[in-house]
Image (cartoon, rainbow, N blue to C red; front, side, top):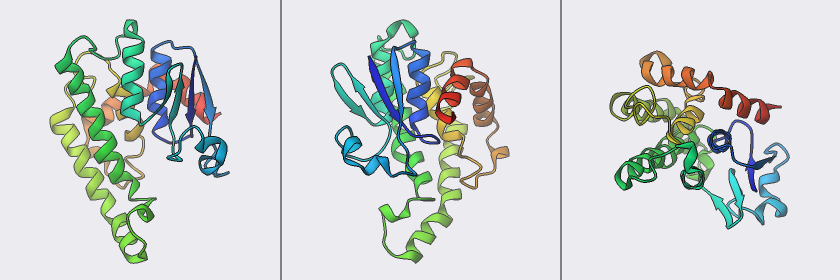
Length: 206
């Protein structure tokens, strides 16, 4: 049994979708940011980082979305969520997801969480103003060079797809014009039509 700790409107949606894709036996537990549950001792005992997602597995606890997605793909190979038997192809999957985690998501976070990097109000405001450009530049790269086909890796759906879909839901809120990203938006629309995506969204927003 796997337990996924999540919060609505966060990157935990990617792992939620992947667990459904894998037909995994799991339980999803909501963490309320409004109630500051992510900073309370019961949750900090699970994830001392005080963030979501976190995943409790039979072998221990995992955090960080790229690691969790890789674990899901490798634990449920019949679902074919990643080319786990091809070292180079799997590394390409990891490279894409690492870019989303370490670059795109961080650029997005400057809109609401500038306090992580600065205390000065003017500096935080400057970071916020930079978000449309910084996030837009990330998506321009994905649109131009990283999105290989109908799915991120080309013809085959992988764990990259729920992750990109999750972050792409925030494009407009980050001040990026979606019309400049036709391939990314087409991917977002295609993902939104998948039954497993609709189920994960319904469960998180219930």
